[in-house]
Image (cartoon, rainbow, N blue to C red; front, side, top):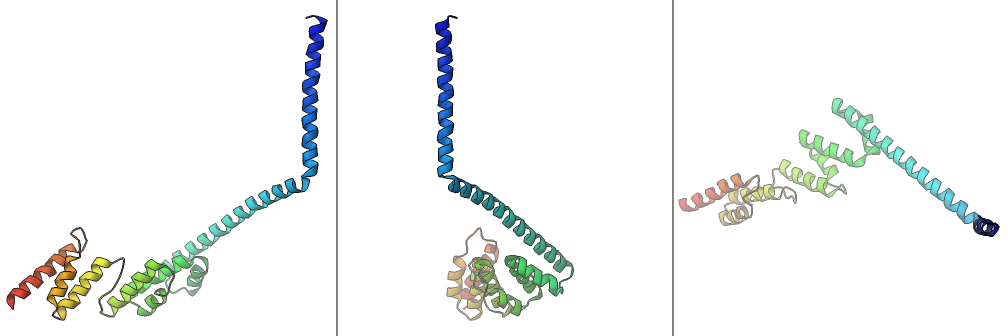
Length: 195
């Protein structure tokens, strides 16, 4: 290499080092100008991640407590402390537990407390079971075929065979109660022939 080439090489090296220093000074100026904003974003990010972790840990703790309370209630259904703990830690699971035990015990009072719930499914099912326990045809969006079957039965009992037949025809062939509906439809036909 000649001296001229070496000088150009050194010049290029100094030029790249100069650009690096220039960029470092620009970064330092930006940092000094926006130091508070940068630290605020950093602190908020750390607090957000820490808060999320704390909330997640707290929710897991509540679920664990609710599960323990439910297991206690399965073994000791009369444990008021476990019932209270279940209600405070997981109200949805508490409502489901009350619904389940009320249906098993045929308790209208328990079902009425659930019928005021904000959970549409439990509200609908509890109102259905209340009507069934009161020996009325239940009306349910989730047990619609069964409700229709019960209403048709009530219509048959009151002598409204055509109305019952119309209701029974609304039950689909793939419904779990389709066999019973067909049997009742057959009954309306034979009852009409008898007259």
